[in-house]
Length: 241
Image 1 (cartoon, rainbow, N blue to C red):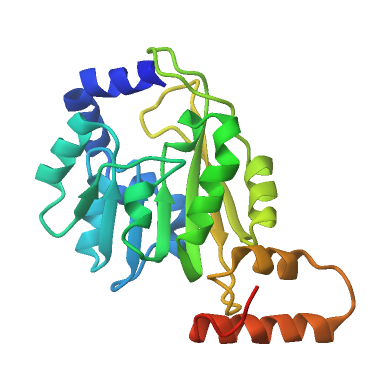
Image 2: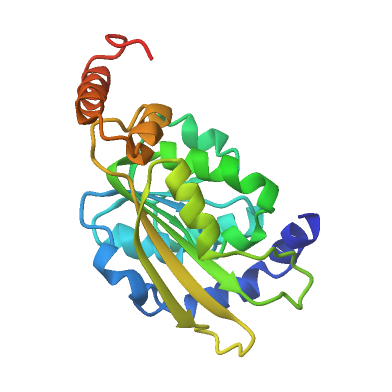
């Protein structure tokens, strides 16, 4: 990953100009139905030049922008506006994000997942799922196509995200494909939108996962579990699990 970080540091200005030559609406048109509304808490992971964070903030969202590369983050700080909060953080740990104690209506992971080694993805996904508000959306874009500029990338797939979502109690909402906005013939994209069901169990992911994936017919047990989960969310410490 050092080669990737070095690439972004050495080419930050050129990359920011490239990113900003495209607008949010054209890049993210495929999931327009799920764009955040005014008042939403948004987490933009791998925010880069701040293009997407700026647009979402202009729509009335409260935006936390996460960018581990110092050079890009400084550009984003200057261009996205003072109302966007920037953090130096990265997947799979997201230590600084977690310290905020917030949950988010939308988490955007755009052009990031392919840089994350497969061995780190389960941990990363678990952290992301725990940061979602009930009925929150997790949006992950998948880049298909090798890097030829020194950056390191790994293969990605919708099937991997489907498995991770099932393991962590999220539901698949959308899978869409698109060509590369920068007209690179060897690069294509898919966007996956996942939803955290508003079942009253957002703080208890392990139990929620059992409930979501339970195929047994003992519906009274599921009803009881859901009730306990709602009590636990409303009254911390009232239910021991």
